[in-house]
Amino acid sequence: MARTPSNMLSLGTTAPNFDLIDVTSDSTVSLDNLKGEKGTIIMFISNHCPFVKHVNSTIASMGQQYHGSEIRFIAISSNDVINYPEDSPELMKLNAVENNFNFPYLYDESQQVAKDYDAACTPDFYLFDSELKLIYRGQLDDSRPGNELECDGADLKNAIDCLTNKRDNTRIQKPSIGCNIKWK
Image (cartoon, rainbow, N blue to C red):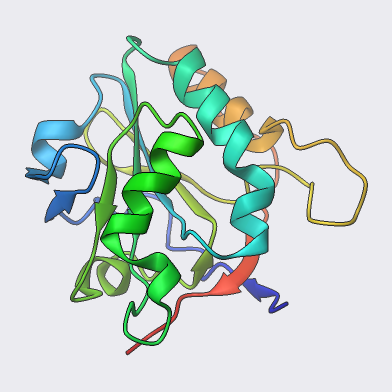
């Protein structure tokens, strides 16, 4: 099991726009159409990675918790589906249904979006403010498969709380750890 860390994109970076297929609705969507009024979470995930499987229920729960709020969740898979067919759009849709994702799950076939965000691993989390400026990047929490810590989303929840309550996030932002993105 690979243990690839996030690249930790610079805070203040503007979120690169994209137009991708949402496998849950079979429609093309853009960041401009999906962004939240106060904040937008972009998650690079995949179907087969054990690190992502470990957090799926937590991200699904957080998606429900913040549903209808001014924070929007967007999941993106950028893996090479030729060599990793379990990450195909058809199986992405099935994964979204099985895990009760209530947020779009987008397919980055060209892998350009992952490159634009300097994404390195799955899962990898980015929180952007209302102006799409990066205010948090890194891990969901300290939990990893096998380390016996509860997966509760503490780091990302703290970042969201700081954003929505207009407080500075003074916590150290730790890189996510997971499977490397499967490049073509």
